[in-house]
Image (cartoon, rainbow, N blue to C red):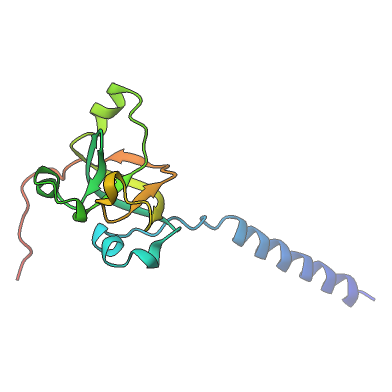
Length: 143
């Protein structure tokens, strides 16, 4: 007689523990990728949410994230991904223009920006944060 209620109580306890363990789990985040990965394999990331960092330029016809500052300076657009961000406020533009930025958005292999010059595009951008440089001098790794 007692075995039935004890088994039911034990089953309820196991169910509660299992539910609390899954509800506390972190929601999967966008995978962090490099611009190199996106540009080299655009079909692999097409339509997927991604997170990346790069050098951002916010100009008319050149709204993009570049692999490196020198790529932006020399107009090497194949080393960049076009950004679908509005250039609505000058203060916002100044905050991110010519800075390294962490970005999360949906990658499009087809939308390649002004005249199709870029290696793809990022749309539905959510996270857009300036990446601060590391403090101090870079120190070589010990041998």
